[in-house]
Image (tube, rainbow, N blue to C red; front, side, top):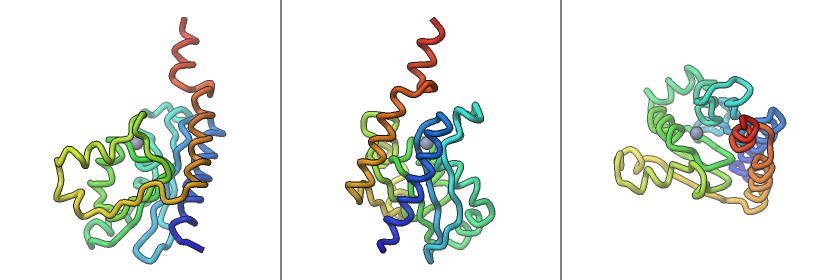
Length: 166
Ligand SMILES: [Zn+2]
């Protein structure tokens, strides 16, 4: 079985759990250079009322000292995400010195930030060290798209929350 597919499916399962918890359907998984699972994370923004609790940041936090050690020793960790990382998570990826990033679905219309930041040519020497794979599996991409569409009508979607104010 394709190892990337295996971990992207795991990230997708986290995204599904997030949606069940009525928050943004994004999941993330970190593995080491031998593809051992290091940490998982999923969006917790709504359950925790924490704006910064994005899946990728959660996974980096959950990786704890393993992530710190990888940064110091320049180990090749991979971060998988069900969605293209936003600007904040892209920053986290750079700080963690994660060397490979794989995501299921681009987020050009939303808060997708990885490609936009990279394309500005800022921090280019940092981005140049990272290998990226975007949207490698069409069927899994479709599953994430379905989750994103379900989110649009979720009770906790910001549009729904604002409508309930009036
Ligand atoms: Zn993010």
